[in-house]
Length: 280
Image (tube, rainbow, N blue to C red):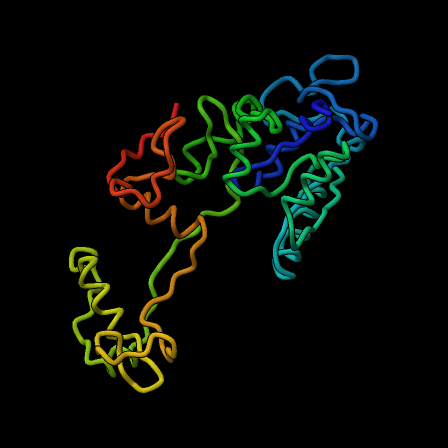
């Protein structure tokens, strides 16, 4: 089971396939069987000598599987990108689109010795599976490719764990606050900060959000007769998932877990004061 599981090479969000290919076993491996990354059937190196990216000697014999999630639009983008990759390299890649229950289905594939060679994976699970020995450390493959330089990537794009590399992010999202000018004007709020140095304090922000939260009787949340059970308009909305929460933490030099084995920083008084230093 462990051998089959070790076939996976995924990223913190999604592994760039050109890195994953080097880390995968040859297609001559039987289903449910695996070899250490970069090793041939005879046990020798599976990479070509000389300059340039490390490559499999006979790309035509390599068939890889790649799992991913996403909308119909994302499926179309991935399909076109993978076709271009196959045209350029000679590798054959089977795309497996899993639009829902992704990690559950991926776990089932792993348990059935049918793990993919590469694909998407969210950061929390990626780091856990890496620690559990399920994922490859792709650092040596990353360093062996002289067409890849760490400085070419945005800060945070390379998913690290100690001295190893779990994978490479396929996207780094930026978050912004959008506001409704008409709602602000109706509430009589005209002094809207547009620069970080002019930002409201937390208490000021909460007060503004209350003034923008309106019930069905037209009263805002600062009115003593405000009806919280019949709200027509909310003053603020935020999607509470790992991305935005992590952005808030990192913006304040904090982390989910400030140290190895430490307690989660979310919900603590000092959650915004922890050092950003990564665990060792």
